Image 1 (tube, rainbow, N blue to C red):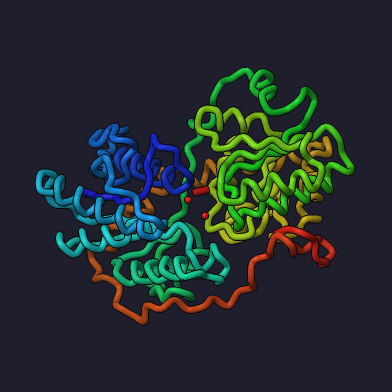
Image 2 (cartoon, rainbow, N blue to C red; image 1 turned 30 degrees about the vertical axis):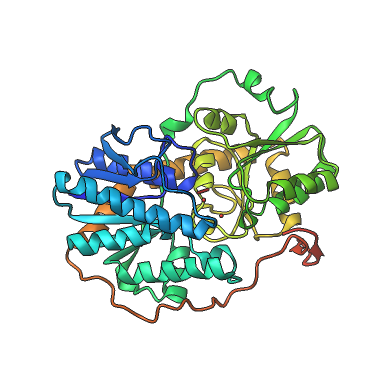
Length: 429
């Protein structure tokens, strides 16, 4: 099958979860004898047309036109560049069986290409604006939600990365259940087997004897890092020789640094910024516990990575995490936003018993058995076959419905384990 994949990001650029997912899926499809072409963003004019691990990568022309003053206009401009690049390369490449779009960031280009070339459109929705912003949308976010709903209505098939996201698409965007498939992300164990001098590596961010609690992901409101900092402060009051390492970047970076100072955690918290492979693999190997405290989580790629690395995992029950982490068997799962419960879970994984080791081993076995990219690619091919034999989704009322869900815990109002309020409440992980 010949597939044209559209994505806002693709390695080797600095990327988040979406770019890695598109990369690994494209590679797995290509290894199964599908011909995959990825049309994506520029990385400074380098590798405009290249083949990477069997995947044909085409990047938009560089330099880009002058950057618009707002992020939404930047996305529209990017889509115009995608269409322009498609017009340049497609006549020589020949006909494709379908176009596969990833999220709203490529919606305009994907619809234009599928209309002009009369091929089915398959769309993967990795998260939703209505969910990510907890239903409280400004004008820009309303546009994103509208575009997501429109993209769903224009697609022959829609892929949701979890059953949680599938429910959001059906309930909030009017997606037709019979045309919406759940295909999870996967994980590649070989990426997390870096051989390094761990004591020397750990010395960069932790003192000798400190046990490392690791967070990897964006520093955005829905990721619950404020909850984690408060849980860590609670835990540190009962245990010493702990180090919280935060790997990632995002809009809450300064606010989180301010909270660290407010909680007097400066000597125990390290912000590393964005960490790429192979350092990321070594970082997981250095952790005593990995935590995913999300308030909203469409899937939970970091949870898969931690589990495939054989690390004990403490996560919230937000979104797709509840489908990955089986509480007490493959990890520990606590109510999203619950500071006290998260602190207790972390403590139980650090208590020195073999409980954490058993969870870690079970988690690794579970992920390897269920989340290989070969398996994900096969599920994706089944969706492609359905798209080739089905018309596009019918047009519906495109205005997004306001979801009936509670507002997000704010930075000033995160529930503790006893139900009382405590202070504290993106692009990938």
